[in-house]
Length: 561
Image (cartoon, rainbow, N blue to C red; front, side):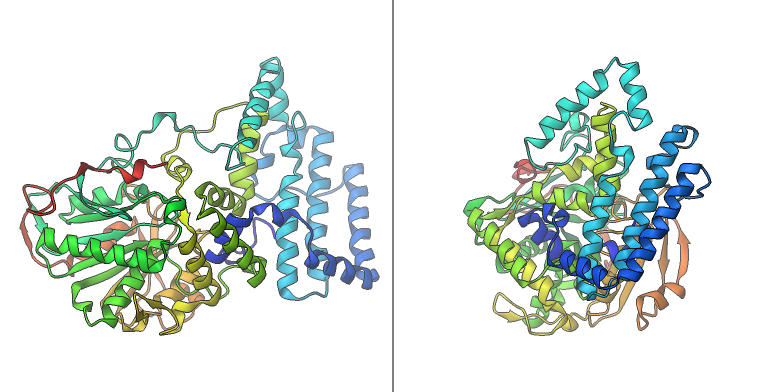
């Protein structure tokens, strides 16, 4: 499975992420029963195997004589240095590496094994092939050799020290960001506001209005439970929250507590109840009887549950609309690496987090990195260790490194939810004693996905959009998972797809879409304008008579490590 494999085949559904986070991604490199079945199948088909190996031998001969045409794919940044093509030895080394990798991939396709076993073997080989690239070898990489000569070896010394440091503390992956220039509440998570409600599970942030008038219907956003909330308030001019406030929206965002072993029993019921308590506070502060409920990634799943709970209890009238970003609810066939998880592995993962009381967010960061090893592991391996450089200072990567924990009970609930695809079957999941039926959610909904998303593939987000009972607008951004959120106006490369017909399958829907230049933020703003009521004078103070400001935004829970 190469970098050219279709994105849905490389994306990772929720159960894979959470199981790998508990058990560790190292198991992906270790041969298992699927690998044994692959080897046995090749042994039983000696003709095909010999033909492939003979082809590799013939290609190796052409490589050695300088007549081979094997070359890196266009856009492969590992081999852009001119020395990889101008130096005869390095050129041959790259060609042998590429030819061997492609032969291994073909041998996997040639084997007569079950699709699940094939996907397991493909995933293992992908990681091994990426790891053995000659660009990862000190001094063999021409940039590494030049840096070592220019610095009299200090680049390798610096890289070696950094390698030891990274290996001795979780997550055991190369450092991706120089975070020294970022401060939460200063140049990230910096939109003015205040904490107006707090319980054991969350802080509720109300953002200060920046317009003379505001829409009467407020918006409440439920962030992921596996990251800090401020991906949507990343930095000035790059903040979805700031964009909303400047449009006259009354913005409220949940900031989850970073749990520890004391909170091991917090589960779906705990978090949905907390969302409903936040909704109570929003209604009290604004005086509005309706609220736009939003959710991001795993927070979108919780927001969907809360909406279905309200529908099941006859209180859906409290919602003006539902907005979900990069949220997968239908996990059926959500990426080929789902083959890496089975009931036994899921049980082991849940048991491990139960013993500790939580799933460590640093383990999840490690898993996210290994989903795209070339970009998120080996790229930084070269930069940090071979060249001895500091990683770049980038706000998205700073946010990504600011990890959180997930309670053991919530971890188990999410694994079961994804593996059994419970939310696609009305009544199969019960929250706070109420059977959950997403089809009963009949308020208008707005769902956005990223075409280049390797965590929540857009095809799965599209299927999820079809689960709700109301009128749904599905928008496909050209961005990836986080870039879809951090997508402010002004990016000339940004665009998004729309198609009001959600009856077709994902590819047919895409074929019939209209492409719009710019960010989907403006499209969402127009959509919300029609569902946010009239405008009224902006409040002069935050909170209410009973719910006073407890702390300035971004609050205290976001600072928990």
